[in-house]
Image (cartoon, rainbow, N blue to C red; front, side):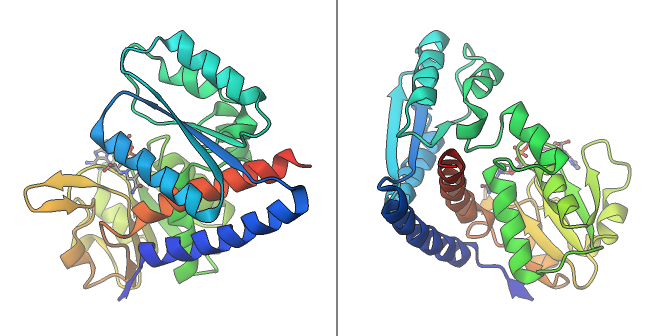
Length: 281
Ligand code: NAD
């Protein structure tokens, strides 16, 4: 079984991006800029944002974090986004989710210029992705896609089963694999026989949020299994895939932690650089 090393893949991607930033600096005499807005003091969000900032600095991006207290008014945040939309030194804007209840998430997402939407959540980017046009792609599914391609560069005609239909993971993952000519089945909480669906798959991407949902006898031999889940349990952090069981059958499997997670941040940097390049045309 191939243990897909997300940490190593992310370090390689960051290295490539660092070279690219150096070249862009020579060509344009400026570097891509990423601005992250962090609202409130949720510990996981603070950790994510700190890691994003550290990685952005490592590849040579100009990085900035704007912090607001939980009590900040929605208007203040929207005005700041408008200001960043106009700022030529800012290539990408990310508002760390989740947001306090009094702030409308969709309004925030739609205020970010689609061309600076490094999370790929703006409806314009969602539409462009599903139409097969150029767009920012949500970072986690993009990371999964790059990991799958490392194991199997030619995905033509492969059967992929996506477990979970969230806007963040399942749906964009489906679009990315459709583009690669996979036959994609998207499953969810109302799917009748999830095991039977998974047994058809050459590729399984599990993004559910249920610890070890995907069992060993749900996976046929030679399947590539990507585990997006991050679940806190009594035995520590586990994914949505039963690692011990599935590793006996799968062709390749991502561990949790150390699989998809590290790729998510590297893909955020990649998206920032892509936004910068598109803005220079
Ligand atoms: P979500 O809650 O938005 O969506 C979960 C999806 O799973 C839903 O579409 C739902 O229909 C489906 N589902 C629920 N129960 C099911 C069942 N019994 N069978 C089949 N499908 C079922 O979740 P999300 O935001 O997509 O996140 C999923 C997981 O991925 C979570 O554990 C989250 O922490 C993790 N995550 C990881 C990263 C990363 O970087 N590795 C990034 C984002 C999310």
